[in-house]
Length: 437
Image (cartoon, rainbow, N blue to C red):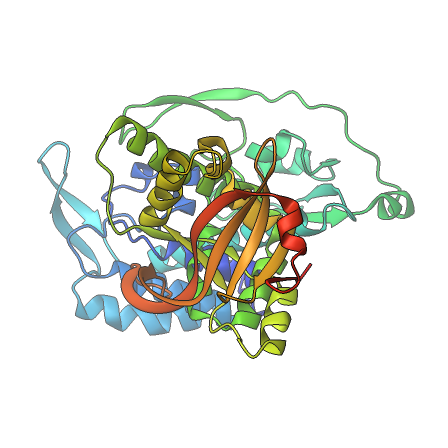
């Protein structure tokens, strides 16, 4: 029987579900999306051909964010699914074979599985997010199983295992490890280990079993004791797949202070985000160099204003309307053309590829008094470079709304537009520039 999750969820667990809700992918079989792929999109098996996926995704999100029980979840969703015909057993055409099969659509048992699996994976993702944020204080994880007659033998054997969170064992064994798995992990500090008398477990031998995905025909190996499709760490996979990008996508619609706070609280995802965004910039630069076609009109959030910058701008009677820093493909092209045309003062390709790093960890930030703008200093190899961020600039870009696809809207943001090599001494001209930090 599923656990009734009654507590209001931590923000990390809700953010995990919101991130998946940006992409709704109908499927015929649950094995069409495998393990970590579920961190990038929301799906329900047999949802293809029915307009129910958004209803189910929103009900799951409300259940987690509001602490709804399974009974409340089912009471809300059942009449909606019944009205849309997604209930009971129906004949459906198998997309691979073309054969008509008798398929189970909505039912009390299916809603229980949907609720249980999504609540547990969201809880696991939130647990991992908190671990990443606090691992410098409490770097250890302990596997905890519910020791009763329903516990799988392998899960019972794993009870009490203590390893550092960065141990590779957790990449596949972070619970839940199967349908209705009730196992969890607890995070511990060095002092707590000593106080509780726990010892670090020796390296473990992982016994693997062959599994053939009947939907795709792919032959894979999964750890013994873990149900196929569960041998992954939801939180770690979400970070690696950059589902945390949902945080950035929401910044253009947030107040400047809220955007700064959200970015500061999500520092643990910065390495993954910087890697993702740098790859995007590199791809655009490569396309420009080779003449390959590129999509036009693409703009991404690549950073956020620091609270110190926001406070400074308010003092200067130029408060930012938004805390997001954005960069468009046109902006990348502008930086690239400046580098090619302005010999000696344009930024090199290598430096342009690192602009995202500079926005998250600038050497210094200045205020341009003559032409109100933020100037981010960057290491330009043999010298220094400055990146010009136009403040309160109206742009067209795709922004996020929970449970919806990204839609293009006009928003006011802070636009990274230009850059050039400078003499650091130039920034000492207090008549033109003022250092913020």
